Figure 1 (cartoon, rainbow, N blue to C red):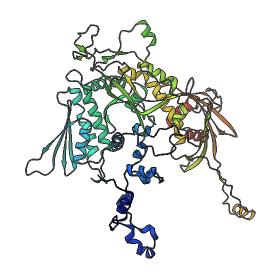
Figure 2: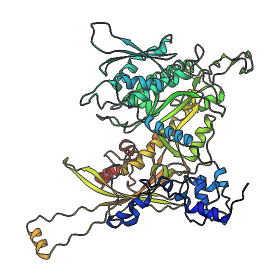
Figure 3: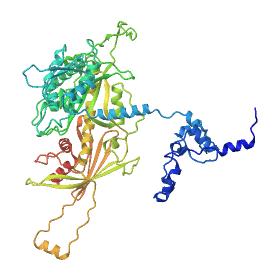
Figure 4: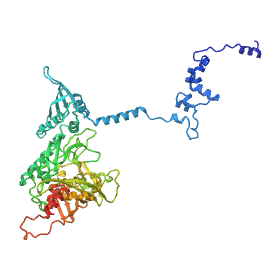
Length: 639
C-alpha cells in the first residue's frame, strides 16, 4: 500500500469545490449593500445564525467568541446547567443550584387566585331570576327541583327548594316572582304558627316593588334569610334535634313572660305598655320582624318615651343556633318550658323574700332535661345517668347583638362570665376608640382624648318660630378605658339574656348620648374670618334699624367617665356663668342628676307654682336623649 506524500495531499486541497450559493448566503447580497438604508445589518442571517444549539454555542465560546446566555442559549436554565453565567461563584451560588431549587408551582398559584376570585364573587348573590335563585339555593346546601306549569297556563313554573326540615316553593313567570310559600313539614304547631309572617318577608325580598326593574332587583336580603334557614336545617338532626323547634320553644317561654309582665303594669298616659315592658322589663320577643327571619328579643328603642310618627332604632338580640366550637359549651336543649306557667316563683325562701320586691319579683325559671340523640359506635359518649349509645348534640344557642353594642371591658368580662364563655384578654381596644374610630391624621394620646365638632341645633321660640343655633361641642375622655364590642356570644338558657338586659340598656343610652351631637349633620370646627365693615356701612345699618345682633355660638364641654359607673359632666354658658351638671346613667337607661348648679334651692312651702326639681332634669334628658337639645331647653326655661 502506497503511503501518501505531502505533495499529493496539497493537490487534493487545491482542487476542492467551492460551497454552493444559497438564498441565505451573504455573498448573494453583497452587490446590494450600498443601496440598503440599514447597511450591512440588513443582511438576512441564516437559520443556523438565528438559533444555535447549546452545544454549538459552547463550541463558539471555547473558540473565543463572547456572548450572553440570552443571545446564545435557548433558555436561562440551559445556560446555568452548562455553567456559562459568570459571577455566580463569586456570590456563593453554584450554577447547578439554580436548577435544583424548585420554583413556585404555577398550578397552585392559579388555584389560589381562582379561590380569591370565587370569594369576591360570593359577596354578591346576584339578581332575582330563575337561574339566580336556583344557584343561590344550591350554594347554601339546599336541593332544587323545577315543577313545570300545566299546559295552557301562563308562567315558567315553580321552583321547589327543599331541606330536611323545610320546603320553599317560588312561582316565577319569565324571571319575575309571583308568590312564595314556606312550609315546615312534620313540625309542631309552635313553628307553623309563624309561617305567614315569614312568607311576607320572603315575598318582599323577591317581588318587584315600585320603581324597581327586573334587571336591577338583587338577592341581597333574600340571600341572608335563606342562609339563616339553611343553617338551621343543616345542623338539625331529625327526629331528636330540630333547631326550628328549639328556637320556637324559647319564643314560647319569653312570650309567656312578656304577657305576664304586661298585665302587671299600669297604663300610663302617652306610653304604650308593650314598649315599656320592652325597654324596662324582660324585653319583647318577636318572630320574623324587620325583614329578618328568626327570633329577636327587643330590649331598647331610641326615643321610646315619646310617641312619634317614625320609631327610633330598635336594639335587639337575635337568637340562633350554631355548631359547638372546640371550646366546650352547654349544648342546645329543645323545650318550650324554660319558665313555669305561673311565671312568678311561689313560695319563696328566706333569701328570695329579701331580694324580691314589687318591681322585681322572683321569676320561676326551669331547667329542661338534656336533649339526646343516638350516637354512632365510634363516637358514643357515656353520660351520667344516660345510656352509652346516646350523646349530646353538637349544637348550641348563640345570641347576635343587632346592632352590636360597645361596652367597657369590665362589663364585657361580666357578660362573658355569665354565659361561661371565654373573653380574649389580649384584645387591646378602647371604649372611645370603638365608638369614635380615630382618623389617620389624629394624634393618639394614651392617657386622654378630645374630639371637637360643630352641631346645628334646632330651637323654637315662644311664638313657635324655628331657628338654629351652632354648638361647638368638645367631647373629652379624661381617662382611657378598655372596651369591647358585643356582637356574638353563646348561651344555654334564655334567663342569661334577660339578666343582662338592664346593663345593655344602660350603655345603649350612653352610646346614643355620645353619638347624637356627632351625627351626620355635624361638622369639624371651622375657622371663620371676621367680616369687616366700614364706619359708614355700620352707621347706615344702625340708622335703618337693620343691624341685628349676631348670634354667637354656644361652647359645650362634655367629660365622659366609664369607671366605676357611666357618667357625663356637661359644662355650658348659663346666666353669665358656667353651668355644671353631672349625670349618671343607671341600669335600664335611667338618668340621675348627682350634682348641678342650675336650679336654686326653693322650699316647697314658700312656692305656689309647680317646682322644677332635679329629678325633672334627669327625666328631660331621658326623653330627649340629646344633650344639645337638653341644653337649649334649660336655657329657654330658666334663663
